[in-house]
Amino acid sequence: MAFSFGAPHPSAHAPPHPAVPSRASPGGPNRGIDLSFAPNGSGADRLSIAGLLDHDGVGTDWTNAFSAWLARHTYYPSDAGMLGEHGDVVVEFVVEADGAVRSLHLVTSSGHPLLDTATLAMFRDARLPPLNPADGARLPIHFTMHYIIRR
Image (cartoon, rainbow, N blue to C red):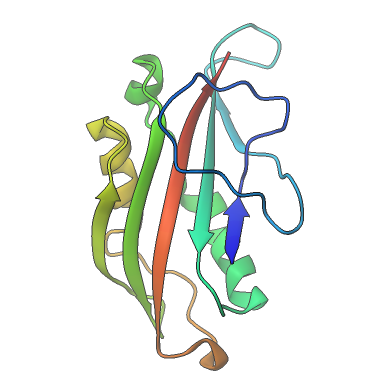
């Protein structure tokens, strides 16, 4: 089962780039976290971030808490946006019962160190929402961060 957080708006046009196959969330398309260089309608580049959590068996309470955590912690590095860097970063890590992130490593690089570093930095030594007892003592996570530039 895959959960999508901040998927790009359906009308968004991203430049072609190697990508992890996208999967729609069970609830349908969601708006992305939109970080703009300029106000809407100015014709400026627009940056979107979308994350994809790939895990079976995690409860909806934790999934919702994780989605809220992502909304507070995701960012598109401004230097990467100005350089036109976009792509997908895949990381894996383990969430302990208390929410501590352990065993973080890069699985697939975007090809841009700024984007890879931003994704790793977001989760390095992070404290995610604590796990519900029903979710187990440890939760292995496979996570894809999509950095998208729309024109």
